[in-house]
Image (cartoon, rainbow, N blue to C red; front, side, top):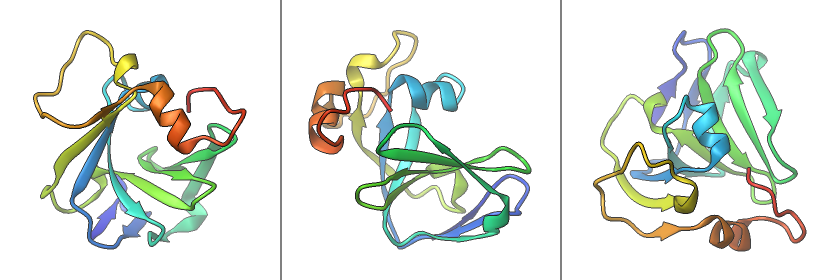
Length: 139
């Protein structure tokens, strides 16, 4: 799958993936302007072109977020322990995706609901599954 930022300076190439996870944590909602982050799990095989324009923010001890320094487009969320990338669905040239999971559902604000029926994980369940021991903060 191919995608790019708004200005086209940064391009991504990912193994084929069709599943979107919706994250309702405070960081993702703040990063995305209030709504959930709708991200495609791209595994460890994401290739990035235009890396000189990629800014990286260490949002926790176990994850980082990247953006285009020219146009500000969100490029990916990366889990550091595994090297897995989660890329906003809007970056890709296709819209052939399906929302298959929602996380941080206990942090979702009351002003929106997704109609999709999906498995849902709370903050505690996400941290138990992904965070290194001792890191109790939301990413």
